[in-house]
Amino acid sequence: MEVFSIDGAQIHALDVGPRQAQLAILIHGWSSSSFAMSPLIPLLSRRFRCIAIDLPGYGESPPLRERATIGRYAQLVGRLITGLSEHPAVLIGHSMGGMISTTLALQVPQLVDRMVLICPTISGRLSFWINTFVSPITMMERFPFFSRLLSLLEPSMLSVTDSLMKPASFAERSAISEADYLRLRADARRPGQGRVRAECFVAMRRQDLSGRLRELETPALVIWGAEDNTVPLRDAGVVADEWRNADLRIVPKAGHWPHFETPEVTMRYIASYLGLPSLISQPDALVQPAEVTTQITEFLVNSQLGSGLSLAQRTRLAAHLERRRYPPQALVDRMNQESTDLYLVQEGTLEVWSPPIDGDPTSQRLLMTVVAGQITGEMSLLDGGRRSADLRAGEEGVTLLALRRERLRALSEDDPALGNAVLWNIASALALRLRLANWQQQGLVRELQALKR
Image 1 (cartoon, rainbow, N blue to C red):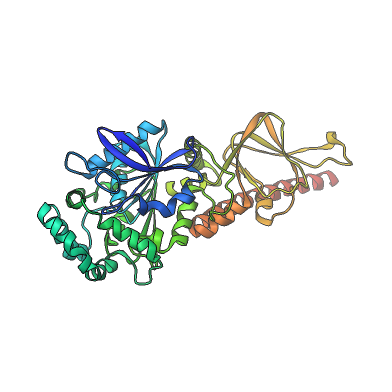
Image 2 (image 1 turned 30 degrees about the vertical axis):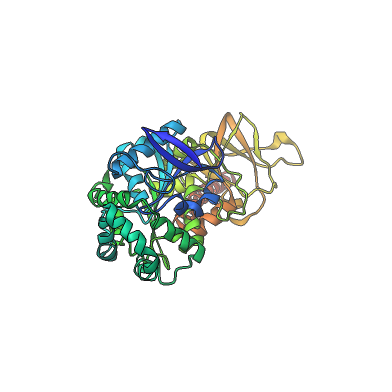
């Protein structure tokens, strides 16, 4: 593990992925460690430089000299980001890590590009189960005598504590492996962490974010287990009511650990949101800087493709669009060429030319000019057929945003609501084009009839 020194704190962390890629900070929850985020690293490290940290006092990181608070943890994560990158980072937080991520986005939104929050603590009010059975033990652990006593009694009480903790943490039909469960349990019972566990328990209860989520401009994917008995689903209701840029997903057959219990569903949501391949085994040819994705997100507002989409939906769609630049009059696609890409013009113009007659290029006629915000290539995208015309960059060149057919299909499967909205926008643009063609055809017929008279 790497060790980062920040404001006198020593933070141990896994550092995986391309060094020049966008930064992704993975933040575990209460009574946990960086292992809690390990299922996400193989997927995320394909595109991001992943820093999975042990918060001070947890895992291998020594505790802070001062009392642990959510605000202090958020400040340390912020310093870590500015020390490693000049660009905003993606935050992936679980449980208390979600509260830390959200707190940082409220404190310094410029440092946070997007967030993925898994069962985040929002109000600080944990479940009845936790407050009844876990809170008293946690408060006792603050004192060295009781902490040592509990450590001595722990081996003989494993079956009792397991019967108490499993229903609080995992769904009845949880698919978590025994090995992963034992490792998570070992992290939760790591010796010497009694003080920091108690301090963080109190800190979460004091950091009630209810009523503040309306201030957030940062888009986020929020994933919640339907059977979460640690952070109750009432906090998901707060997210739904207050956070307009949050994409909230409830996962069946999952408790407080969806990324361990239902990894396939959880990974699919995260992959779709961050523009990653749906399957880890698939190569990902689309890797673009964070600022490019942000620019595309903003551009989509007034485009045919992004019409009516929320910020979270536009962010997700932007991650699937590939930016391409062409000089003036460059050939983008040729008639009869196999291509299933949909093109959205971002800058400049794209010209659509009729095919040459008997191979004579001078016989080609300009059929249409596609301007910024408009799309073309709908037919090839939808039916997989060959191009019916030549596409050329305009006199000033063109910048295109390309959506590949396989990415749209994967996006529609991962996020039916977004896929449906995008397809409706494509259909609306195509209908508008057909209406214009019909009107032009009717005008030509009228002209011919007038000539006959």
